[in-house]
Image 1: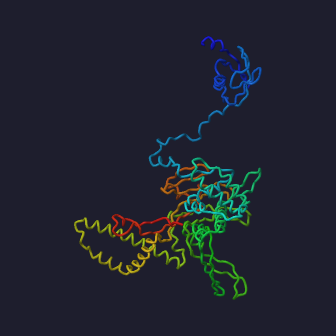
Image 2: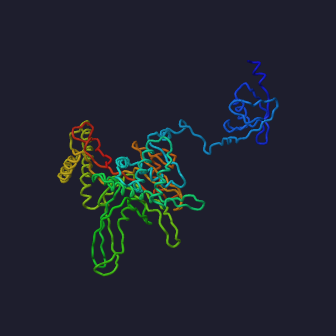
Image 3: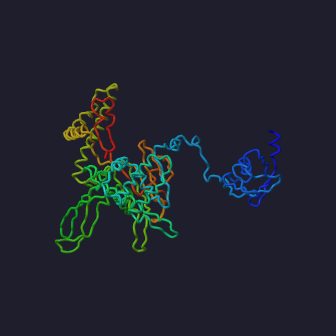
Length: 518
């Protein structure tokens, strides 16, 4: 066998890319061994090598190919690119500071990113924020289309949305949203606008968000079913408004009711915080016909929130059209925002009365927990039974006036809790932010930021998903070239007395504040 192998060994010349290589070949070995040697010399992968010899092309076996000592062979094929050093140095998880090691390991259950199909970051950021609403998954999962709607674009978009959200939740690899994008452009042709060279243009994420939610609502409402099913999406996102208008010239007054899926927070020179901007946005003037004057007149308009949704989307209106230059501009002003948003002062008196029950019950539970903690601490102390300077007596006297209202509210809270419900408080927690980076209103880049159930914030930059430190989120307030908040999604929280019942050991340490269920 050794003699056969020696007799089959020889040297041949390989001509490739204007160079010649001397290669040892043993025809007793399969051609794959020969090609591996060529790969080590030229960098051309085995599957790309086309070796031309007299009698044909070298295949997986030698076949009819007969090589001779010193024979010249020609090869065709492109070499692999030379590995390039990474732009950023590779950092291993174990080399990170302890507080950043957990963030670097993003759990798979957080969901997947979305591949950018050409200026589609506006769509990806919108979907990532809406995907952080678990009740939306449930609403779409229960969607049952009536017959004869196969050609309806709202129906198609509803099915595409259900499919993409499910895939984002279960996939462990970046999702390619081709079907959803195609359906979105079919429903809203403006998202298919192309610029020079045939490239798709950047679009406004707010228009995508509002258009998508309105389309879903229209289809789900028309799909039939009971009243709860038809109004499921509106319960999630629809904000009810009640406006009072007054004509200063004639003294006339009128009221209007409306609803919307997005709170528009307008920014003025004085606006530096979201709360202030929201309050200012509910007051203004409008031109309207006056029956008493028989002409158009200026009316003052004061609006209040009459119905609160489970999720409150708030847009900082950063983009506007400048008539003088006929261009779309962006407001770069920094606007701070809270992680806990309280809209109580923006509500109608009727809605405030409903919120007061939950707010008083929550306050009473906190007071009870504080009182119990103090009593426990005083009982353990040396002089626990003493009334220092009559403070306890004064506190009891001051609390007596409010006790009757607290009893009534507590009774209402107990009834709601017994029925499995929870009391609204008008407070919301931030769960997602959609940001825009760049100074151009027609360009830039959108990113979605979403808070997970375990409290970790994730940045969804198209298909790149990264965990973030909590201190990164307040920096999204704008005022520079960093990502600036454009749409903020707040989730309503309610108060429930369950878990804080009298007699439960340790239960009174804190009241139960729950996420409002749709």
